[in-house]
Amino acid sequence: MTTQLVPDSEYTGIMKLLPAKLRGFALLARFDRPIGWWLLFWPCVFGLALSGGLIARWDLALWMLLGAIAMRGAGCVYNDIIDRDLDAQVARTANRPLASGLISRKAAWAWLMMLALVGLIVLLQLNLNAQLLALGSLLLVAAYPFMKRITWWPQLWLGLVFSWGALVGWVAIAGQVDVAMFWLYAGTIFWVVGYDTIYAMQDREDDALVGIKSSALRLGGSVRAGVALFYLLALSGWGMAIWSVRPEQQALVALVPAAFHLVMQVVSLQADGSNALGHFRSNRMTGLLAALAFLVAFGLHGFCFRFSGWQGSLWLAWPAPWVQPILPATPCRSASWSGMPTKSPSARSKLLPAPPAF
Image (cartoon, rainbow, N blue to C red; front, side, top):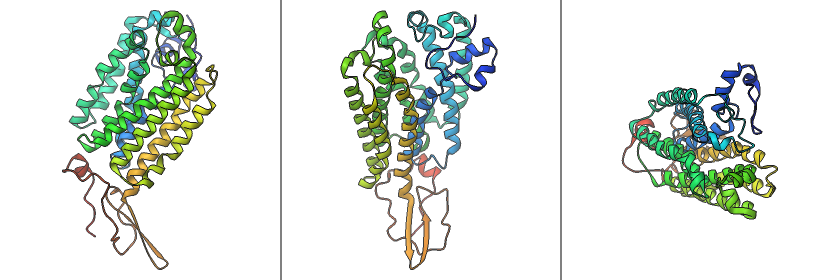
């Protein structure tokens, strides 16, 4: 049996060179569609960036990228095992390796265990609190395939799952919970609900025929308005997360590029879903813009400029300790740490050295 492609496959490069059987396993884990693991990875980056550890712990970001690839693949395999019969009835998914019979269910379970093993290796790179928090997502992941059978809002459940990395990324650096991480999580959930509602627009006819529920079906002709509301809630949550870390109006300006990108998605979204796939994929850029916003909002608080005549001096202070003062300078008297977390010492204070004495 030959491997056939689903319509949203990005089937290029090395995938074409794989033998048919191996190609089937790769397709089962959605390696042909990297958008999925990008969308799982960005929330991890959000947590790392807003907690102040993205630059100092860039290695952890790479581990989380590997984890996103492996665990997104494992989640897709599990989802296809559960949905094999349903997938066979939906035009867009009928050619998936399990639904088409290319891969057996037993082989799929073995492949799932291998991917989970990679995830375990990544898990061991985290501190204990982050490890325990990461394991807490497994119940949400296990329940997700059944949500489309019992609720019109499986996209909300997916938001709980795909946004979990924001919590893990924060705790991996801070070592403790904080109100900012909950705002970050809430905002990211609504971002996921928005873009997955767009994605679900492709399947509305088939979903209705086989009894699958989705937010796109529930919203009917108001999909665009619904997505706009979800994105507004996402930006609100992200804004509150930034404000919790740095309560300054100028910090919120960092979200403007991401906000503009989301607005353009909504404005140009076609009601018939004809451009839904492209709009869904464009959220890879949204994730990048949001990650940069969190990095700027936190990181710039560690920058202090002082000019004396024509000679400028740059000091990089906590929470940006990875670069020491690079020019002789008169200390910045304006350097204060207001707006930054000043709670009891945590893993973050151990990771990042104390600010210089001014």
